[in-house]
Length: 346
Ligand SMILES: [Zn+2]
Ligand SMILES: [Zn+2]
Image (cartoon, rainbow, N blue to C red):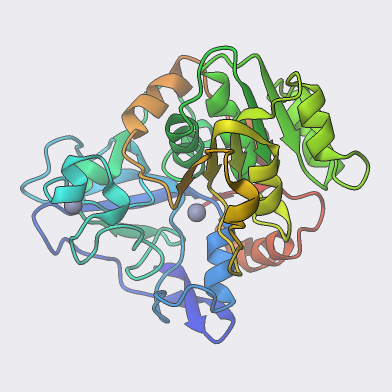
């Protein structure tokens, strides 16, 4: 089969690989039907993900059809259409039992798919712990609607949940890229009084506004983000700030624009250390939540998609087929043509 492989040293390429086989009785083999490219794939290509193993097939955001199941698999059958969870988790360890699946202690636990074990930018893929890692796609949900369930929408859903958003809150979301937009979509479910979107790219803010995801849009440089957020909150600051930008000053912007006793939720992946100026923060009594998604709410997310309450298809700006995947990577990496997300037919 054809597969897109991380070759190490900044290189990726399409290679011929054997079709994967069942190894454990909890495994599922999928025929991949649609995949996308995530910014994490670009981080791997650049060598910025130390645990990524050269020679691994990339791809952790995709949907497919079940072709074979191990003897212990109970929740899916051959023929089922399924979305795939970015994280592999055993469901039995200390962390899994508490819903903290990102820290599953299984050797393949956490984000391993398309990083340490072969992922889904290929014709077929093996999914360990298929009962935990797959969610059935209802007949009236399309592949495009389901494509982001296991990664982007899971991240947005998780961020909004740990942000402890209450009805009537003001939520500021820094970054209106794919992750920020999914955070806004999920934040809406909690009925905040307003969502304030901040980004340097105005086309992204426009999309956020057009889609009804942001009530207020702010561009750093054009407006003073901190004072505008204070103006919108009777001088207090945002009740919840979700930092999904990971820019040079966005960590500082996050804690500065939060109100005292507010929650600052750090979803962004930083490439550099950040400074926590505790003397300046003293008395503000902030609550920081940090880290990577615990992607264990996929059945709930799929239900919300089916009910029309979550719809991330507006992120798909580009479509192609697998034979053009290298060009697709280049456009995504260079942020050309106003690209937000690809939908790649396999
Ligand atoms: Zn990803
Ligand atoms: Zn576990």
